Image (cartoon, rainbow, N blue to C red; front, top):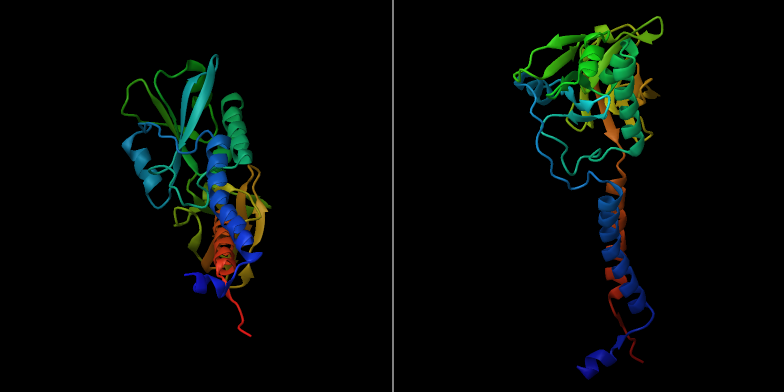
Length: 286
């Protein structure tokens, strides 16, 4: 053993390797701790919200139309939850919403209850919401506001004391909207069949008029879309969600540059460097 060790050279590389290994081990641990502390929705189990079967079917169908579930009262405070399919999945690019997205959704719900006009309902459509469900007991002022909302119509519920409304315009996670006098026409929207994460290939039907592809996701420079003619111009909707101008006919590939993936690649690179540095060098024999 002593002869073997004598033939090996231990120098500055071994302490550096130990430090790199420690960083590689602590980086994901620190990220997990920050995630749990910073976001109160992380790793939290909640009871499923009971919505009518037909609304749940719309969420899990090709349109992926979500339901806005309201609870509470205007006097004590109205809470809300967005029900999409069977819930958020760990591993998706948009597993946790950014704070800016939460703030935009807070504003959309407040506008819906205080000034339920066409713009407020359009904001719901931009977020991929096609129905509103008020859990019993329903606050009278909430029901009155939604009954008078332009662009909403009363829908049926299985619970006698609950209330439900659906949007008149088509709703979905990915929509293709024509432009009329420079403004999108939500009533003529076509629902696109998109992957659950919105990243992937989306088929665009043929059309000659100017139009936009809207995604039910917060606008970010991490989103990109490429058609047969090259990258599409990214635009933001009035609700702060992502859209792309004039998508090409045929297949459009939508991508999201996830920082989570870059984090894993950095971690892997540190681990590889640590292993290489830790290898002892062979001492040259005279």
